[in-house]
Image (cartoon, rainbow, N blue to C red; front, side, top):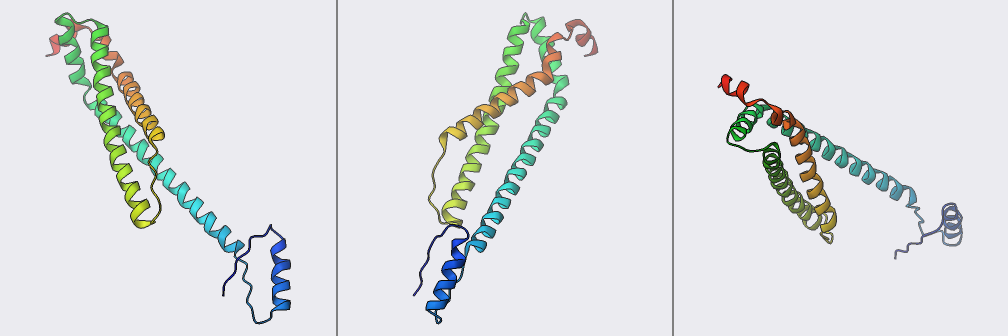
Length: 172
Protein backbone atom coordinates (compact mmCIF):
# COMPACT_ATOMS: atom_id res chain seq x y z
CA UNK A 1 0.00 0.00 0.00
CA UNK A 2 1.18 3.49 -0.82
CA UNK A 3 0.00 6.83 0.53
CA UNK A 4 1.06 10.38 -0.14
CA UNK A 5 0.48 13.59 1.78
CA UNK A 6 1.29 17.21 1.05
CA UNK A 7 2.30 19.26 4.03
CA UNK A 8 3.74 22.73 4.51
CA UNK A 9 7.51 22.91 4.95
CA UNK A 10 8.59 21.92 8.45
CA UNK A 11 5.46 19.89 9.23
CA UNK A 12 6.62 16.86 7.26
CA UNK A 13 9.34 15.91 9.76
CA UNK A 14 6.75 15.80 12.53
CA UNK A 15 4.47 13.53 10.46
CA UNK A 16 7.35 11.21 9.48
CA UNK A 17 8.30 10.89 13.16
CA UNK A 18 4.71 10.10 14.20
CA UNK A 19 4.27 7.49 11.43
CA UNK A 20 7.51 5.73 12.33
CA UNK A 21 6.62 5.81 16.05
CA UNK A 22 3.10 4.39 15.63
CA UNK A 23 3.84 2.02 12.74
CA UNK A 24 7.41 0.75 12.93
CA UNK A 25 6.94 -1.60 9.96
CA UNK A 26 5.98 1.32 7.63
CA UNK A 27 8.61 3.33 5.77
CA UNK A 28 7.98 7.06 5.54
CA UNK A 29 9.97 8.73 2.80
CA UNK A 30 9.92 12.53 2.44
CA UNK A 31 10.12 13.44 -1.26
CA UNK A 32 10.10 17.25 -1.05
CA UNK A 33 13.88 17.46 -1.54
CA UNK A 34 13.74 15.15 -4.55
CA UNK A 35 10.91 17.17 -6.11
CA UNK A 36 12.83 20.40 -5.47
CA UNK A 37 15.89 18.92 -7.18
CA UNK A 38 13.83 17.84 -10.20
CA UNK A 39 12.28 21.31 -10.38
CA UNK A 40 15.74 22.93 -10.34
CA UNK A 41 16.95 20.59 -13.09
CA UNK A 42 13.92 21.33 -15.28
CA UNK A 43 14.39 25.06 -14.72
CA UNK A 44 18.06 24.75 -15.71
CA UNK A 45 17.09 22.84 -18.87
CA UNK A 46 14.56 25.56 -19.72
CA UNK A 47 17.22 28.24 -19.26
CA UNK A 48 19.65 26.31 -21.47
CA UNK A 49 17.01 25.99 -24.19
CA UNK A 50 16.27 29.73 -24.02
CA UNK A 51 19.98 30.55 -24.28
CA UNK A 52 20.36 28.19 -27.25
CA UNK A 53 17.38 29.90 -28.91
CA UNK A 54 18.96 33.33 -28.34
CA UNK A 55 22.26 32.14 -29.84
CA UNK A 56 20.33 30.79 -32.84
CA UNK A 57 18.50 34.09 -33.27
CA UNK A 58 21.78 35.99 -33.02
CA UNK A 59 23.39 33.74 -35.63
CA UNK A 60 20.38 34.24 -37.89
CA UNK A 61 20.66 38.00 -37.55
CA UNK A 62 24.36 37.83 -38.44
CA UNK A 63 23.62 35.68 -41.48
CA UNK A 64 20.93 38.14 -42.58
CA UNK A 65 23.34 41.04 -42.11
CA UNK A 66 25.99 39.20 -44.11
CA UNK A 67 23.55 38.50 -46.92
CA UNK A 68 22.54 42.15 -47.06
CA UNK A 69 26.17 43.30 -47.05
CA UNK A 70 27.10 40.84 -49.79
CA UNK A 71 24.20 42.03 -51.92
CA UNK A 72 24.95 45.74 -51.45
CA UNK A 73 26.51 46.36 -54.90
CA UNK A 74 23.54 44.80 -56.67
CA UNK A 75 21.15 46.92 -54.65
CA UNK A 76 23.04 50.09 -55.52
CA UNK A 77 22.95 49.15 -59.19
CA UNK A 78 19.23 48.32 -59.06
CA UNK A 79 18.46 51.61 -57.30
CA UNK A 80 20.48 53.60 -59.80
CA UNK A 81 18.77 51.93 -62.78
CA UNK A 82 15.38 52.55 -61.23
CA UNK A 83 16.30 56.22 -60.64
CA UNK A 84 17.37 56.58 -64.27
CA UNK A 85 14.06 55.08 -65.34
CA UNK A 86 12.20 57.68 -63.27
CA UNK A 87 11.55 55.98 -59.95
CA UNK A 88 11.48 58.20 -56.90
CA UNK A 89 13.29 57.53 -53.63
CA UNK A 90 9.95 56.65 -52.06
CA UNK A 91 9.19 54.07 -54.74
CA UNK A 92 12.61 52.47 -54.39
CA UNK A 93 12.32 52.49 -50.59
CA UNK A 94 8.89 50.85 -50.82
CA UNK A 95 10.28 48.18 -53.14
CA UNK A 96 13.11 47.44 -50.70
CA UNK A 97 10.67 47.31 -47.76
CA UNK A 98 8.39 44.88 -49.60
CA UNK A 99 11.38 42.71 -50.43
CA UNK A 100 12.55 42.66 -46.82
CA UNK A 101 9.02 42.06 -45.55
CA UNK A 102 8.66 39.04 -47.82
CA UNK A 103 12.10 37.77 -46.85
CA UNK A 104 11.32 38.13 -43.14
CA UNK A 105 7.84 36.64 -43.43
CA UNK A 106 8.97 33.61 -45.42
CA UNK A 107 11.91 32.98 -43.09
CA UNK A 108 9.81 33.41 -39.96
CA UNK A 109 6.99 31.26 -41.36
CA UNK A 110 9.39 28.43 -42.19
CA UNK A 111 10.95 28.66 -38.74
CA UNK A 112 7.51 28.75 -37.11
CA UNK A 113 6.30 25.72 -39.06
CA UNK A 114 9.41 23.69 -38.29
CA UNK A 115 9.52 24.82 -34.65
CA UNK A 116 5.84 24.05 -34.12
CA UNK A 117 6.19 20.63 -35.74
CA UNK A 118 9.23 19.74 -33.65
CA UNK A 119 7.58 21.04 -30.47
CA UNK A 120 4.45 19.00 -31.22
CA UNK A 121 6.55 15.86 -31.79
CA UNK A 122 8.49 16.37 -28.57
CA UNK A 123 5.44 17.12 -26.46
CA UNK A 124 3.15 14.41 -27.81
CA UNK A 125 5.59 11.64 -28.70
CA UNK A 126 8.53 12.01 -26.33
CA UNK A 127 6.86 13.54 -23.26
CA UNK A 128 3.43 11.95 -23.86
CA UNK A 129 1.75 15.17 -22.81
CA UNK A 130 -1.19 17.13 -24.16
CA UNK A 131 -0.42 19.57 -26.96
CA UNK A 132 -1.82 23.06 -27.03
CA UNK A 133 -1.14 25.39 -29.94
CA UNK A 134 -0.36 28.97 -28.88
CA UNK A 135 -1.43 31.08 -31.86
CA UNK A 136 -1.05 34.53 -30.29
CA UNK A 137 2.63 34.16 -29.28
CA UNK A 138 3.39 32.58 -32.65
CA UNK A 139 1.73 35.46 -34.51
CA UNK A 140 3.60 38.02 -32.41
CA UNK A 141 6.91 36.27 -33.13
CA UNK A 142 6.10 36.22 -36.86
CA UNK A 143 5.26 39.92 -36.81
CA UNK A 144 8.32 40.76 -34.73
CA UNK A 145 10.68 38.78 -36.95
CA UNK A 146 9.21 40.34 -40.08
CA UNK A 147 9.47 43.85 -38.61
CA UNK A 148 13.02 43.25 -37.43
CA UNK A 149 14.04 41.94 -40.85
CA UNK A 150 12.48 44.98 -42.50
CA UNK A 151 14.20 47.39 -40.10
CA UNK A 152 17.64 45.78 -40.30
CA UNK A 153 17.44 45.28 -44.05
CA UNK A 154 16.32 48.81 -44.70
CA UNK A 155 18.96 50.20 -42.35
CA UNK A 156 21.58 48.29 -44.33
CA UNK A 157 20.40 49.72 -47.64
CA UNK A 158 19.45 53.27 -46.58
CA UNK A 159 22.57 54.70 -48.19
CA UNK A 160 21.62 53.05 -51.49
CA UNK A 161 18.75 55.51 -51.87
CA UNK A 162 21.15 58.43 -51.88
CA UNK A 163 23.66 56.95 -54.32
CA UNK A 164 24.21 59.35 -57.25
CA UNK A 165 23.20 57.72 -60.52
CA UNK A 166 25.90 59.23 -62.73
CA UNK A 167 28.85 58.11 -60.58
CA UNK A 168 27.52 54.57 -60.24
CA UNK A 169 26.79 54.23 -63.95
CA UNK A 170 30.34 55.34 -64.83
CA UNK A 171 31.71 52.44 -62.78
CA UNK A 172 29.70 49.91 -64.78
